[in-house]
Length: 377
Image (cartoon, rainbow, N blue to C red):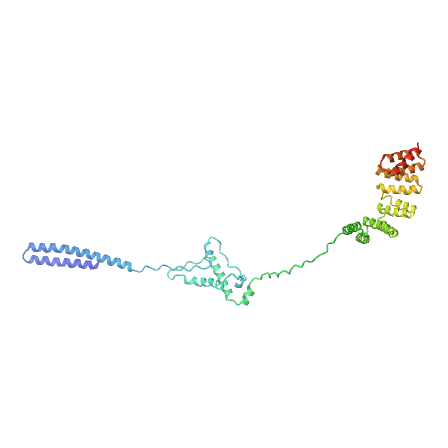
């Protein structure tokens, strides 16, 4: 603007001098008018050019003037997310906790722990000199303190890190390979005896009597009170004319199981075969309570008593047997014989008739009973 003012002042001074000179000289209207008309457009053009030049220079100075540098932005630290929660209460510095050694995680690369150290060092450099940075909130300060602890632990010797590291439970040792122990199944005695008994029966059906005897003996060794094995072995011994062994075997069984009806009946038959009717009657009488529900037991006892001519006792035993098995024709015949011997002819004839009506008598016994009926008419 000063340049334009000077140009205007020069122009005004020049015009004033020209006017004074024109007044002193002769008046020449035509030349003066021409000069004035020519000078005015030139002046206006010069003024316009000066304005344009001045505006261009001002615009150039404004473009070349450097902008004020923006305030440097502090580098973000590794714990920046903690500072985003100002509403939370200030976090007190955590008590000194043992910092885990960096070797605890095999997946973390070796250069990764250096990042927190650089972030902490960059915090004071990020503050601009012109304006002091606002004080960091307490959560961020606590995070920086934790980062400093991590950096300190990284610079510690390995021995110190191991001492400061938290005690971890020892890794469980690899379990020893399982040892499979084969244990023999504790089979109950009765179950073992049953198995031996079935094997012996199979051998006996094959005609292998000696092996069958050994099998029955094994069954009795497993379970001495196995009645079926003892009876089968006694019968096999009796068939082999070893009645003494069979007798001893049965007596042993009755000693273990007093009153067992099956053993008593088998031993009584051995006594009958020997001709010892009295001994057979004694055996059956001792086990009578055990055989109270066995029709065959009563019938055998009645037959022994009948042969010993104890007819009243025989009648009672026959009647007990027939109550359990009323269709046994032979027992009706035996009852008739004892009733006839006891002098009860009418009852005897009725018993004989029932024996024939049963239809279970053989032809020979049926003829014998028919004859008895005729005699008692």
